[in-house]
Length: 195
Image (tube, rainbow, N blue to C red; front, side, top):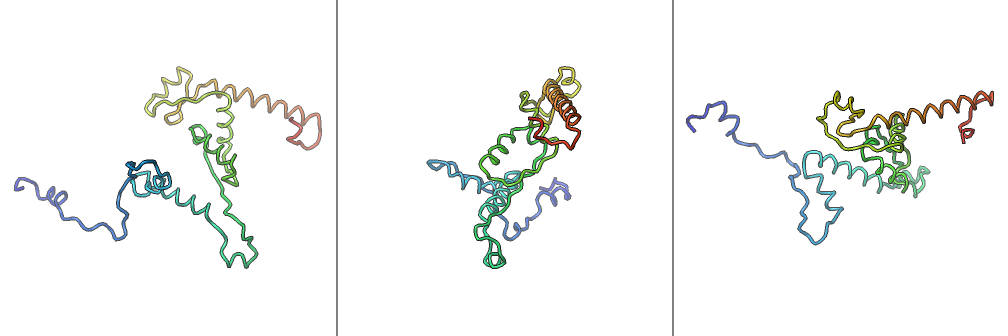
């Protein structure tokens, strides 16, 4: 080791301290069993590392929300013993553009969330996905080349211009009809009049 510069030796060959007390050790799921135990698989994400660790923490938070029950003190203060955690799900438009739309639909359909919080873009993207497909592309596709082909890139997703044009046509028709009904009623507008 006499040819190794001292600064390199100090950086690479220096003695290690112990891992911080209480550190979880990295370990993934052992798939060698007869069948997959999905609870154990998801629990293992907490010690898998990188983004799996954050996903594992999210699973713990969701499980805590699902298992929550009021304390004796809360029940004494007039909280119903059968009360459950009210779960809000906030999402952004890019989650709908991606494949999360189906997951959100499942959670709502089976009453696994109580309140949805979205931006107007999240609702708009939902309509757009009803009007035409979105494809999987690549993050490194060049925007100026896609533009010539009438394609838009959202991350690694590809959306044809036609989808946006269909949405605009639908929205313009709805706006025109709404303005017409408001003119006929000469009163406050009610959404039920659009049926």
